[in-house]
Structure formats: C-alpha cells, structure tokens
Amino acid sequence: MTTHAAGQPLEVAVVGYGLGGATFHAPFIQATPRMRVAAVVTRDADRRASAAAAYPAALIIDTVDDLWTVLPQIDLVAVSSPSGTHVRIAKAVLEHGAHVVVDKPFAASADEAREIEAVAARTGRLAIPFQNRRWDGDFLTVQRLVREGAFGDVQRFESRFDRWRAVAKPRWAAPDATLSAEGIVYDIGSHLVDQALLLFGPVASVYAEADRRHQDVRVEDDGFIALTHRRGVRSHLYMSVRAAQPSLRLGVWGSRAAFVKFGLDGQEAALIAGARPGDPGWGDEPSTNWGRLGVGSDAQPIRTETGAYERFYAGVADAILDGAPPPVLTTEAIASLTVLEAALRSAREGRVVVL
Image (cartoon, rainbow, N blue to C red):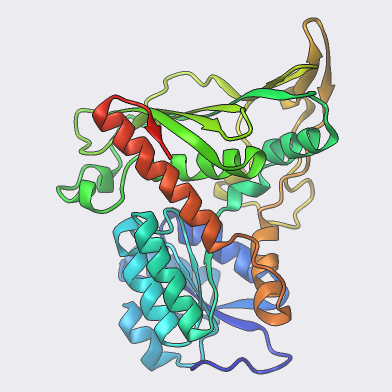
C-alpha cells in the first residue's frame, strides 16, 4: 500500500503519452503545486524521447507492470491509454494502493464503472473520472447563466463538437474497435453527456443516431443524442469528426431569453501550440467568439468565462491530500455511461430508450 510522505508532492505516473497524456494530463500535473510527473509509461520511441525532454526528472517506463518495480511509492496514476485498457489498468492501480484518474471513457459500461468503484472502496483509494471539459470557458459561462436564472425556465439545450478528420483515427479503424469502447459516442459523447447531466440533472429517456461516415472506420464517427431530462429540459447533443464546416457550439433556449455561441474553447488549441496554464491570457477567449444573450435583435454579448483545465488536477490534489470531494465522482461517470449505453442501444434499435 502506497503511503504518501507528508509535505512532499504527490508522485504521479502518466500511463500513455499520446495526445491525451502529453497534452491534457502531464502538463497540468506538473503545473499543480502539490504534484509532480514522476514517471511516464509508453513504449513508443518517439513519445519516450518527447516525454524525457519535457520531464527530465521523470522515469520513462515501458509498461504498467514495470511501474511498481521501478517506482513502488507512486501516489497517483493518470490513465490515458487506449480506451479498452482503462478498466484493467484502473483496477491494477487501485490494487497496488495508488489513487487513479481515468480518462474518458471511464469504462465501457456502467457495470464496469461500478466494478472500479467497488475496488476503490475496498482499497480505500480514489478512482476519479477525467472530465477536463467541465472547465471549458463556454460551459462555465452557461453554468453561470443557468445559476443566475438568465433564461427563465430552460426548455432546450443544444451542444455540438464538430470537427473534420480526413484520415480515420487508427484505433477507430482497428478490427477490435467495437469491443474496445472506441468511437465518437464514447469519445466526444462522454464530454457532452457529462455537461448536460451537470446542467440539468438525471435523464428520463434517450434517443440517438450514430453512423459510420468514413469508409475506413469500424465504429461510429458521427452522432446525435437527444436527452429528455426528468425536469423537462431537452438536450440535443451533436458530435462528429466528419463536419467539414463548424456549426453552433452551444445554445440555451428558455422562457425569458436565449444564449447562442459559436467557436470551441481555445485551451486545447493553445496546448497543442505549446502554451501552458499560467501563461498570460491562458483560458481567455477573444470577444469575437463571445456568445450573445437576449431575445431576437435585443441580444447582448456575454464575456466568456476564463477556461481553467488546471482546476481538475488542483481538485485531485485537494481530494487526496485534504480529503475534499473529488472534482468528478465515480457516480457521475456511472450516470453518464448509463446514458451512453442507452444511446448506442437507441441507435441500433431505432427507438427511444426509457431509463
């Protein structure tokens, strides 16, 4: 069982150093005052070299199994490996006495997520789903407007992640993709459903459409999910990597006013370009991308809240070291996966699924 030394930063291993590990995990772990990147697990030669250059004090390790031999006092493992490995690795981490952060999808099913939750409870460690897009500036803005009652009674929420991928994502084209929780529903859908549930609560029914548009993929790369929340709000969620032109990013329509916004949160693009949290202007959005709130032509620009992906790992540190609630709960991942499973069933069967 790993025992953390008081006053020392949390020793964190990052499993997987593709886009997720290199862009969304390692930089934020290193930027969190009470954490440090102690190890990176990857076999890829180019990624090993990149990780070693970015984190010269970290150990570069071939496999998760090797991790415990080389660095037995690890406190936290961030899992950003292929989706189909998440459950196995998360359970192994917990059994070795470390806490674990698991990238989306947290698991391939709600039942598998409950298995991780049970192991975490038995070992006395935390299993925390990764949901960095709770700190997208546009989502934070909508959260604030809903909280302030700016819309009156909210009637409909629309949220879109439109991208264009001319070449099929390799794992989506793999022969075992359908068995490995790959595809747009588990990928972007995990974020969109999580945001909708945070805003408007539990779901009564789900209708979905999911299609394979690129000739090489074996899983869905274009989809739509309609949620009817128990409180009466309808969420319409669109996700695609085959959108040659972007559309609306999000909109909220209510009895008093509506809010409409275009343009994705800029933190991902900034990270890929080399920016890091704490840089001047981090998380700020240009006024040209601000959304507008109001009725008809009487709509005013609303400044986008500052995006803050760094708050996820700050919350993880608080949960481990201070006993604060985790920034994302396993019960929330289970709720989202229940919806995602219903969405895939709806798409297959062409019917509304009642939860």
